[in-house]
Image 1 (cartoon, one colour):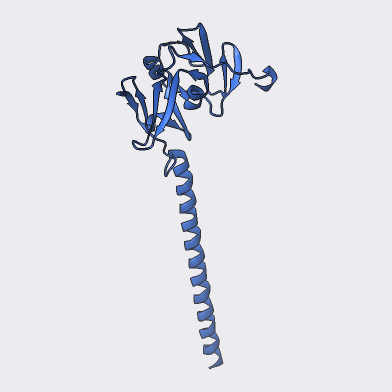
Image 2: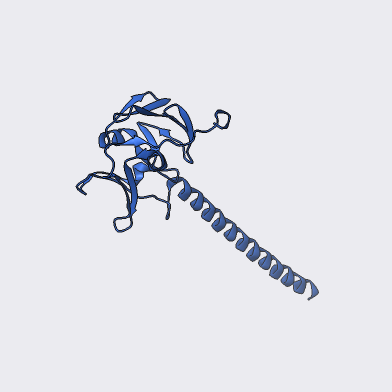
Length: 188
């Protein structure tokens, strides 16, 4: 009888071990799935960080164009395409895949941006952005650039319509660049 009692205890211990092992494997698989889902949502912009559309609003308050969030929200930053900006404002674009120069008609000013760079040049002087410019099928400029350096433009978030709105400042005659203290060349 001692042998069968011993075998019963072995079976119970084995059952407990397998139950614990199964529980650990389930926790491991669920954890892996949660981590994979989190990482995937970061790359796809999932959850609350999906950005919102960008509307270009004319002086009369009518929407000139609305860019969907999928196109203007890239890597956690709101962008606008340079060609769309050119169609909305009186500016001219010239460049290639590596460099784009934006010419302002009103004041003989220009802005140079570089694909994949955080540095822009305002009338030749370097300035740093917190987000890089992107080139895919068009140049995409961070809204920060417009908000910080374009005098005569207004960027506001319309909470009611859940979108950013870009419009002209009615008090400004023309779009110009805000000149700020340039970066030191060694800091660029």
